Image (cartoon, rainbow, N blue to C red; front, side):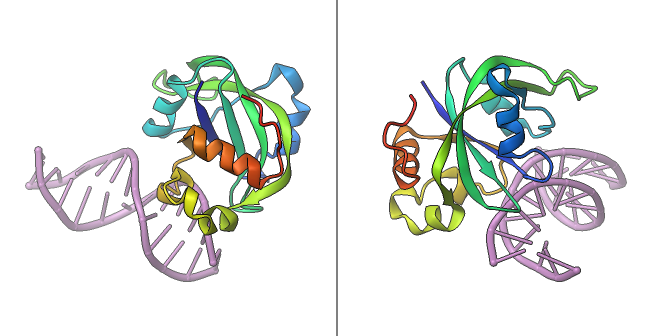
Length: 142
DNA sequence: GCCAACGTTGGC
DNA sequence: GCCAACGTTGGC
């Protein structure tokens, strides 16, 4: 089991929109960055991840899980670009902001701090559990 | 809206 | 294959 972080600008695709897709989930399309694509290729069904609002909100607002392995991005005209499908699992009871993450020494190595611009990031288990704890999630889905 | 960081492109 | 120019992302 691996952990990830998915960034989205809420005015383009928000957490509410993700939740509205329900159990069927949503193709995480639009990624045009090799590192982000490679992260998605490495994902397994059931991997968990954070849903992060960039630009506005600047916070981890929910937990998602991978529900389809990497496949061609339906919005791309080039088979180079692939993406997974993800579905909402639960809300973060208390959104964990970027400022919260930066202020926590235990998270100083997190990609969110170190590789700010990467849109699909790996998260370690320790980081996953720590952010869940900060967000008031007592029994984080694994 | 500004600008720093960083990935990509393209000339040589 | 180097590196300057350029475009995009995203925090502030």
